[in-house]
Image (cartoon, rainbow, N blue to C red; front, top):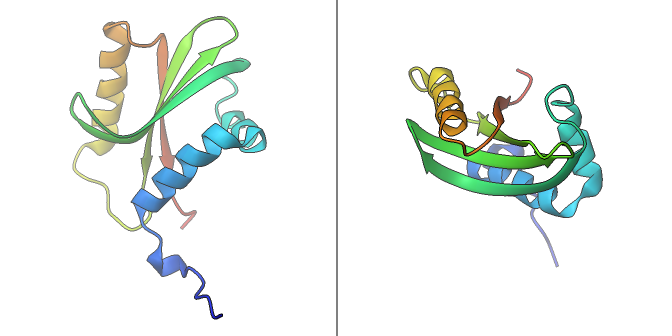
Amino acid sequence: MHVDLLRPADVREHDIDLLLREELYVSEEFRGFFFKFFETKIDNPTSLGVRHSVDRYGGESALEVDVRCSSGRLVRILIEDKIDADFQSNQAERYRQAGEYYTENGECGGFITALIAPRS
């Protein structure tokens, strides 16, 4: 049986979103790796929830990760990934505004915006 391997050119942002969502749920090792990027803002995460393609204030988030810290504080990570598309006008600002909206409306105690993209 011949199996074609997935070529990098075949990977789309939607694929990365779903892979990240799955790995955050199923892999403690991956969660540890992922949360190290935010360790100054997230202290000892105790639980999480991950939503994909979230319609929200000012647009859509590719992923939103809610992390409950050991202090009880809920931090929401708003993630955009850029694999094969350009930034939209004011996209980073809209993510920041969405985080402020969530915080002001009591949906979370703080927020982080994050970009996942190839190094290039």
